[in-house]
Image 1 (cartoon, one colour):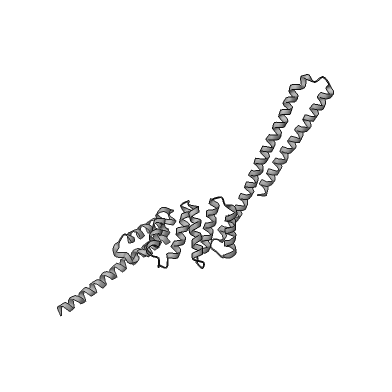
Image 2: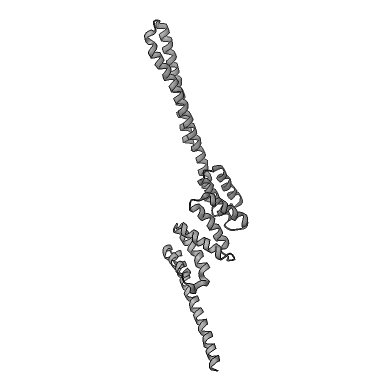
Length: 261
């Protein structure tokens, strides 16, 4: 009888301990989530780390790790968030949050200024999860990565695809803005190209004009016929006027392009 009583006592003791652990885990997790809702992200991240560091709360690790990743992203602790994401993806492949963390891992590559790797990772994500709620966001960050690499045409195509496939996406306004920005970048390139071309053209014409003007001044003393001198002078004045017309044309074109932006 004493033995049975002891077994019953141990059973209820273990249940009590487990219940206490669950209560402690729930309290800590809820406190962290409450801190996040109220903008106390640093405090929330600290609580989630404490949960992960307590071996008695192992059943809470996936949830705490998930929220720690999101907290670190909000705090721009991208390296920490990446390490936490790698840990999650290595240990919790069957967890419901696995898909979302896979997306965040690709996004973090962009945030860590590694756009080439981000394009690969997010490209794999959209292929692997064609029905994911995060697919349109993955497209957006692929577009951002392409823009960071200066691949504007490809970025514009990705943003256009996002808007076409996901017109109600949370990223639709950001994608429209990026498309407008790309259009302005194209105009800026056009303006800079014209500026460079016009400057080079003007310098070439100027050098040719001033070379001939210098030759004329050097030869003035040798002119004996006033008619010859007047003809040469008139020709130089006409060429100088033409040069000024060219310069004026370039300036007007540049101003037109600038005002059209």
